[in-house]
Length: 612
Image 1 (cartoon, rainbow, N blue to C red):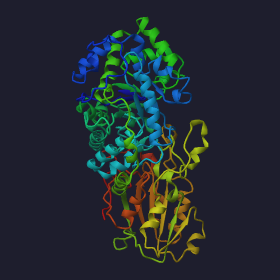
Image 2 (cartoon, rainbow, N blue to C red; image 1 turned 60 degrees about the vertical axis):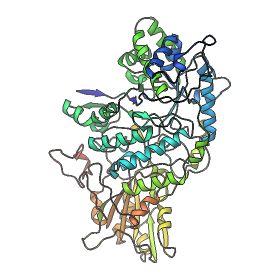
Image 3 (cartoon, rainbow, N blue to C red; image 1 turned 90 degrees about the vertical axis):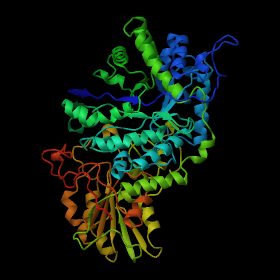
Image 4 (spheres, rainbow, N blue to C red; image 1 turned 30 degrees about the vertical axis):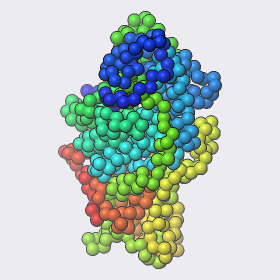
């Protein structure tokens, strides 16, 4: 079987009880006429059918189109017709839409919503965003570890809490839908999206998928609270984590046992949760059906809609999309039954998440955004995701827990004091950022914010954890003389790993530590300094050739903003409890290699982790 990955997202929604009635917007009914779709006491399916029967073709097609909000926000006075004329049913914020403040985004969301509500039928707008490790697009949000780190915790209740916090912070900015979770089962760490996968083991992915959905939606398949929960999304497509050699968006070649035994279960878990949602294409996804991309856009629309895609993430050329889709329907190439099926699914979702009764975002949630309680959960997630792989060169020479009160210690490596690198990709921008976040402000065309995002770097966490009398020396890039200059240091903490990346740009043939990471290890651990190496990475990296010179080795994955969790376990305030969510290879030529394989010979096996 060959599964070609074009990027499709399956939306989670289900029927729910609608409590409030807000029928003052839109509609063209005669005075006193009973309008069933506006009746919150009516069954969802009855409301859907009543509304569908009232809709014109342009109104239906608008519901099948999702556009980037910048189409409107770049020039609101001119572009109101996106909602009033073209009746676009959904907008998204792209990964560069970082935001200035929750309240300003709520104002924007409500302005767009009011335009949608002013139309003939008053169908509310669905606003969506990627929120894959917290509300990661928005500055000063609580950024949690990426999924690979959460997989290391094996703690579904913690993941449920993370889902609930993410939902609340997303709602605090006026957004009702999160493109999360990624339920891929990554089978090859060379894949640039492997950190978005909880594990190579579908059982772990299933466990975390069910928990995060319950957190996002309140109690899947229902939304427990229309004001604080959001609709979730299973992404991206069955077997996207099994492509040949881990090449992003390439072909997965596998037998039925692999497809249905490894890659299908997380999506089945979504169906078990009573999937009643819709299927949406990914960013410019249908454009890439043809080679070269967009070579025959009309065909791409016809093929994708007839195949079962209900909403298309256009995200820019919506006028062309709607014009071509109209021609295809009028010409009989796409049957009206398929259009009605798609729109029915979209409307069902909007009724089910309470948009008809609660269309406008709450301003009061802004005070909850990135608060200390949320950050404490993030800190808990970091420490539970930490995996200790080596603790001393001998059984009697333990390194962890580190001593807090010593004369001097050295912290080395670029990753030790770089908020962007410890958060990884899909943080403030698509490919992540370098430093504090202030550098992002240079891109004024996207109206990105100034100022650094809140959080604690690993270096700052260490400085807070040690005794006030302990001198902490930070050496970003050690050289051959570092060990001599700081020979009196009790120990060195070396923090190295990967630079941020996302999707195809993260595909790697080598899985090497980013330069000058290996030199940093050699110039510290290899020069006689007692050292603990902390890897900041979204996947296993090549480390075997240097393992003997390292006294202790831990992996922090991509911990997010709450770096204090790293110091919590290094210094023994909490134990190391994390275990590997994926196999750590000795060599790249062993890949793909997963637990249960015939020739399984890892450096560290799946599930390994030293407890303290």
